[in-house]
Length: 125
Image (tube, rainbow, N blue to C red; front, top):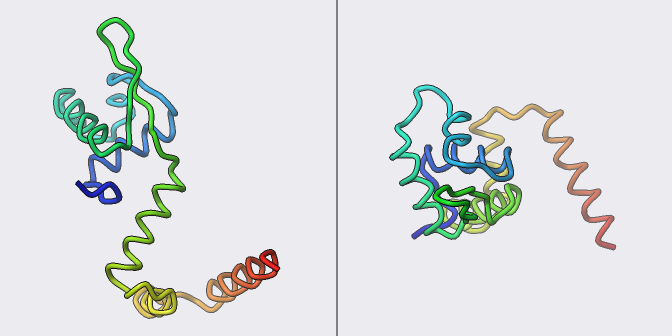
């Protein structure tokens, strides 16, 4: 099962758990955007996230309090690495070129990216 690939509902649940840090099913459901999904569907989504190793829970009587096992930035990093290798032959320059072309990135944004790269390179010295 692909850990770095989430469907829309799984992604929504993860974002809720990252925001709340830990939550019971009813709290996750409360945060879920409209249209709300049935609680049984939500429980299935969370179970799938547990199977993927992204979520775990503490048990209190018959209730479960869920929490993410991975930080949002760590997940984003893995997902981006996956996209980079699967769609851009692991080439950052190809990925940047794609976004510059497709997203009509303005020069100010490109300059900000360039300055960030320079700053990162200087800090590594």
